[in-house]
Length: 425
Image 1 (cartoon, helix red, strand yellow):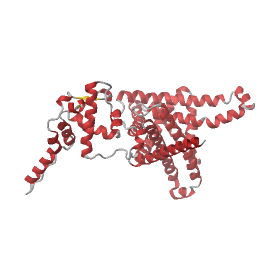
Image 2: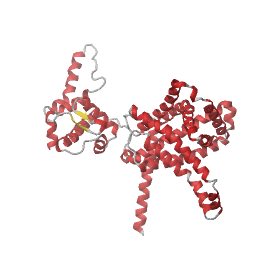
Image 3: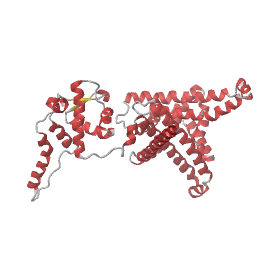
Image 4: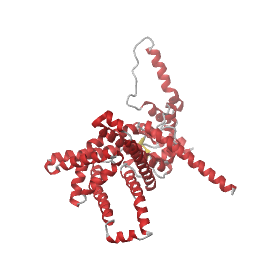
C-alpha cells in the first residue's frame, strides 16, 4: 500500500512537472515565437479572404445542394458574439450571395481564388514556423493540396452535417428516441459528439497544414486541447458580451466590428497554441530547452562545428543511415535552429553537402582531406559580411597586427590535424 502511494505521488509529481514545463513553453512561444503577432496577421488576412473563401465554397456547395448548411455553421462559429453574431452572420451571407462568380470573368475568378490561396499560404507559414519547417510546399503541391481542401473539404463537412440533421428527422430514429435507454443515449451522444468531432477537425488541420510529417496522437491531442479551449473561451467571451453594453455606448456601430476582430484573434491564437502542444508532444526534448533558439557563443559554434563534422564523418567512414538535422540535434542536445545554422555555414564553406529533400548530410570530400582548422575557419568567416573595414588612423597598423593574431589563435593551434584523426579515434 505504501509503495502504491509513493508510486502514485511520483507519477503525480512527474505529470505536474510536465504541465508546468508545457505552460512555460506556451508562454515562451507567445513571446519569443511571435505567435501574438502572427495571430494578428491572420486576423487581417482572414478579414480580406473571408468573403472570397465563402463565395468559392458557396458556389461549389450549390452544385451538391448542401449550401443551406453554411449559415448554421457560421452562426455556431460566431455564437460567442451573441446577438451581434446573428447580425454579422446575416451580413456575411448577404454579401456572399451578392457575389456573382459567373460574371466575374476569368481574371476576376483568378483574383478571387488567389485571395483564398493567400490565406492558406499565410496559415501554412504560421504552422511551419511552429514546427521549425523552413521549406514551404512547392508550387505544384500548394495548388493540388489547397484545391483539394477548398473543393472536397466543404462538401464532406456540410454533407456530414446535412446527413446528421436529416437522420434525426427519420421516423425510425424518433421511435427509438422515445424508448429508454435509447433516448438518454441519444441525448448523451448529441451533447458529447461535437467535442470529438471538433477535436478531429482541429487534429486534421494540425496534421495537414504543416509541410512535415505530424503523428496522429500529437495532432489529435492538440486538437482536443484546441477544441476544449475554444468552447471554454467562447463561453467566457459570450458572458463578456452579455455585460459589454459600455462598449456599444463608446464605439457605437463599430462595436460589432471591434468585438468580431477580438474574437477572431482569440480563435486564431487558440488554433496556433494547439499546434504548439502537438509539436512538443511529438518532440518532447524541446520542453527542456530554456529558449526557443539559444544564442551560441563563437566558441560554442566552433565546438559544435567540430562535433557535427565528427558525427557526419563517422557515418561517412563506417556507413549507416545519413545524419539528418533532427538526429544531429538530438545527439548534441540542442534545438534544430542552432544546429541548422552551423550546418549551413559548413555547407557554404564546401565541407558538407545536403542530400535531396533534406534527407541528411554527407561530407563534401574525404575526411583525410579535411583539416580541423578549415572547419573552425569556416565557422569564423562564412557570413553575409565576412570582413569589417578598419578605419585609417594612427593605430590602424597595430590594430591590423592584433586582428591577424586573433584570427590565427585556435586555427594555428590545430595546424594540419585532420578530421580522420577524430573519426578513427
